[in-house]
Length: 150
Image (tube, rainbow, N blue to C red; front, top):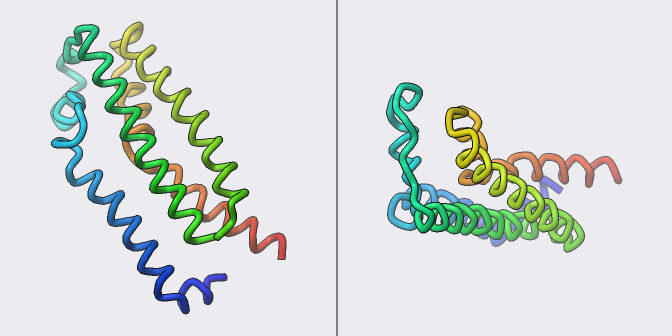
């Protein structure tokens, strides 16, 4: 499978393009998405209080983080399809992304609302929401599964 990937130049081009899209989302995160925590977590945040939010700002933050997670997820799903050409893997992963995204978004808002002193918890939940970390787990896992089945 790895030899097939290296021999197929179009597939490599598609994979690189999708990775570039993920990088561009990260590079332009400040202009595309509303996230007051971008600057907050760049500072010495352990000694400063969290930014205050009104209800509309909370809704805007929730929507923005959700859109970013699902945009990263969609690109990751395309990446899985390009690499493995298996619709079952994509369907399963889409279901997992939906569950993870929902749980993480609800957890983030719950923690932000009821446990604002738990800054590290907010930091890590937010990190899983805004970074395409799960694809780093899925690609090797599905590759191993494909190799194991042979």
